[in-house]
Amino acid sequence: MYKKLLVLLDGSKLAEIVFPYAKELAGRLDMDVILLHVYHPAASEFAPMYKAYVDRAAETLKIQAHQVQDSLGQKEIKHVVVRGELCTGYHAEEILKFAEENAIDLMLMASHGRSGVKRWRMGGVADKILRASKIPVLMVHADAEKLIPYDQWPSRSLLVPLSGSEVSSVVLPHVEALAKQKGAEVSVILMEVVEPPVTPSYYSPELTGVPLNWGQFVEQEMARNKKAAQEYLAGVEKRFKEAGIQVCSIVHTGKPAEEVIAYAKKNPFSVIIMSTHGRTGLSRLVYGSVAESVLFGVSNPMVLVRPQ
Image (cartoon, rainbow, N blue to C red; front, side, top):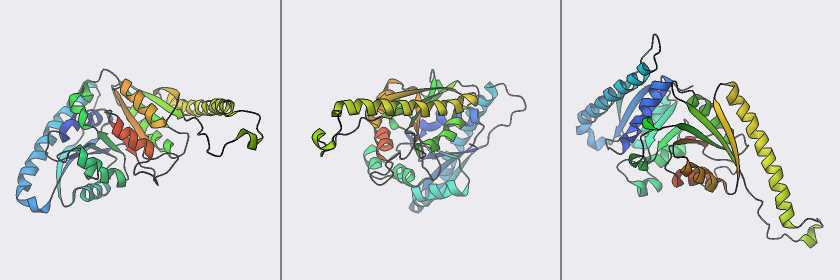
């Protein structure tokens, strides 16, 4: 499923925090890698310098990815190809165009490079890519430079928030592909959060004729929804177990974004994989309320998949 990885660079050290992820994914999934640097036409005189930078970075990453492949002890190994490329123009537009024209399967980038967090959150390059990318984007937060690098994680898990909807389940093939990293024990945690019913402003036991009070109704509704969530996750679990993937599932109650964030903070060695919107669609927020809240609320890397 994953054959080509596009790594976005802007020449900053902050953007290079993605290198441990690129090395591991390329080496363990046999993905060819393209390091892409986009520059403005006004900076054309610096193109040779940019080219030297991406070529040097590509050579370093190639050596590291080959070392990962060699460590797996595979016979007749075909080493991955790593190369650097330049584009000139508007950053987000050129990146998206390049990804489509080169059949990229996964895009890897830091949450911001030179522009800083404030600008990114208000509509920088990463923001535009997340809005429009047709392929999954692995976003590594800037905070990662203060944390244990991905290639040194003591354990690895994929946290997969689901809602039982078809939209949220589009991530499942991507989870399965990422879980099959050679020579690495990767576990999958399926998570669904059941929200308590919201008391309607017009609710009145006298008007409804229902003998239950609101508390009893909520208790019964929560029990029903938790059972449905457990049954749904059990079906997904079966799929992964049949594929030889280590998997478990958990059901929490509360607000989805808050529960996912709380779990991720307690489990820092997790990559979160989720669709860019769930039940509510894209009308309210760019990425869907849950995905966007989680994106800004955790330091964990995230793979965001946009439903087609």
